[in-house]
Length: 148
Image (cartoon, rainbow, N blue to C red; front, side):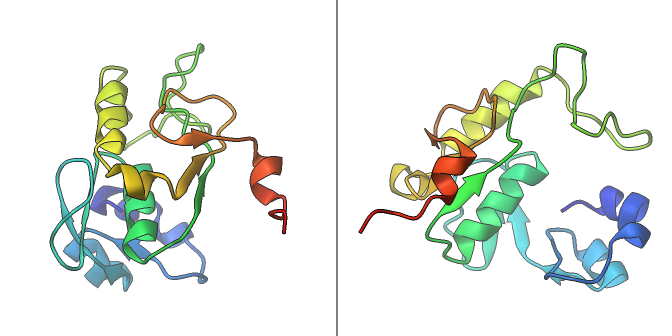
């Protein structure tokens, strides 16, 4: 969602699904779809606007909910620094910022500001997660067909 990420990795992104950003410059330079972003957690009350929640995972969820997803399954939303000090599954970014341990609790609070009724459409299937405001389920349970 952010300009610096697109400057660093934009050339490696392959054609495919719609690509979105909350940054006008990135949208122009990389021919991305743009949506207005505003700081903070929860859910925006402004048309065609999402809250940014301080991280791309929040923004991906906000975008899915903005477009009316009836169900969202979160994967990899561990929201914590690993025991080894790792901040991402792929290792630290070399030239981009990496999350600080003290930001993660704030990010969890930003997710918790999403209205309760909206949060009911979200299931956190991450193996380990500090994010407690969503229902939890294993991935296999999320993929199973609902009983008739």
